[in-house]
Each structure stands twice: as C-alpha cells, then as structure tokens.
Length: 155
Image (cartoon, rainbow, N blue to C red):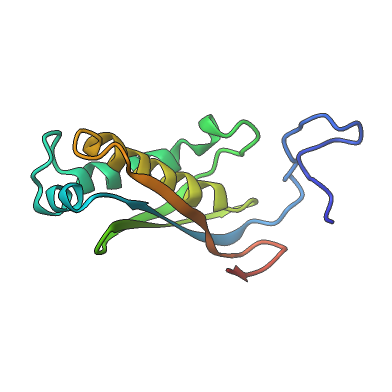
C-alpha cells in the first residue's frame, strides 16, 4: 500500500508540502447521480419546482463549491482554478452530474471535481425535497485525472 501523504512520521495529520513539485496542467473529472421520483424529475425538467430553476442553481452551486474546496476539506491546498464545468443530464429516473476542473499548479484537482459533483447533487436534493424526500445520491467518484508526477488515470 502506498504511504499516506497526509500523515507525518508520527501519524499526525499534515498538509502535504508541494513546494518542490513542478507546475503542470492538471485536470480531473468526477461524476455522481441522484435518483428521484417521476414527479420530482418532471418538475425539475419542466422548471416547475417551487424553489425555482433547480438545474441552474445546482450548476452554480457546484461551480462555487469547487472554488471553495480548500475551505471544506481540511488538508486540501487552495488552487487557482482555470476552468470548472458542470453538466447535469436527466435520465428516466435520475440526474447525473459530471464536473471537470482544471488548473496549472503543483497539486491535482480531484477534490475540486468531487466537491462540485457532490454539492450540485445536494442542491438538487434541497430544491426538490418537498416533492420527494426519498431521493438517493450515489455513485460519486472520480472518472479521470491528468497531469502531475503520477500521470494520467481513468476509472
């Protein structure tokens, strides 16, 4: 098993020192889904939810969350994001969120992409909960990452 980089020699939590790492173009894509009732999905699709345009608000919430990831995840480095995109795709019984984040930096943007997806899905739940409290968020995970010394990775 690889060493856990967020633990020092004594097992205490620490922020990883990235000072010696080279600046490279980095990108990460994450995804997740929320399943919801036919009624709730129709309201979201038709823009009929009482709280407003669910998809527009969820997209903005996810993008904002990516930008604030280091404030939410304790040992995460603050990053100058160069791009955040968040797509929401409606299926027959679910909405899929897919976020891609990019930066030119010394550490990756996986946490930013995962945070964007998670907050977008939580926002959908919040805005549609009056229609369906049984919604389920699942399948949140990293699809791909590129850049850095560890190279490219795909699920």
